[in-house]
Image 1 (cartoon, rainbow, N blue to C red):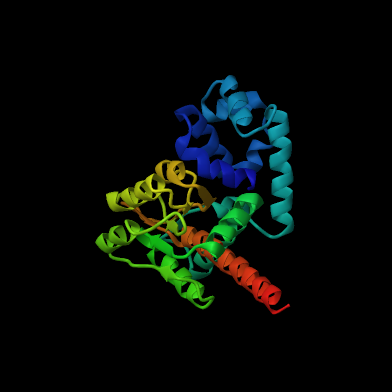
Image 2: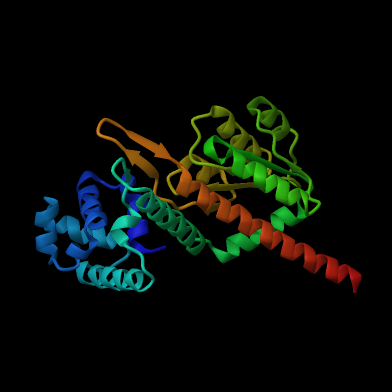
Length: 280
């Protein structure tokens, strides 16, 4: 994951002073690399020790190492034509259609890249193995992830897999209660406001049913219950007006779709290997 994307994703979890630093870095990364730690602290209106703690939280020994990494990231983004400011810009009423298209393209591309970079290879291989050997696979997509789960189920059916993707919440719970340790429950979406989703996750964990989640790093409850998690990393797409802000999940859906497509391709590859072995 790039440093700027990581900062954007962890920003809501940071302390108030660290959020000020994060906001300044995301808004003006080119300015930040010209400043000393003391100057950055003054610009963010925080103590200099907060700068050191912030960079250490990101895994750097100190501000000089952090600044060098940001410079390298800006150089890389310039080389491939990305504007780091635009990656985190909201869509405004005054934007032209071309500007909106460019912002959406950046946000969706960034979500796809960051999500794939965050994949742990060993965990992914274990997830593929669970799907491959599962007698039944139940997919639950909640909120804006519902069509992602439906699309994923359609793709898995083409591989001859036993997939259930019921969208009605009460039926979802009824099905979950029939799952066995030889099955798999896969939940896609952000932290759910619906208790049924969390109840389904708790039931799976209690009954030894493998639980796989495709969710953001902020979905703490689901992550704690899951056996394996694939992170969806995306800056929230929003439209700002003078009076209010409208939030959408366009970039997030791109991240979710990337993971489900990757799982489908990996499972299709595994299916071909299995068929080849059986024919020999």
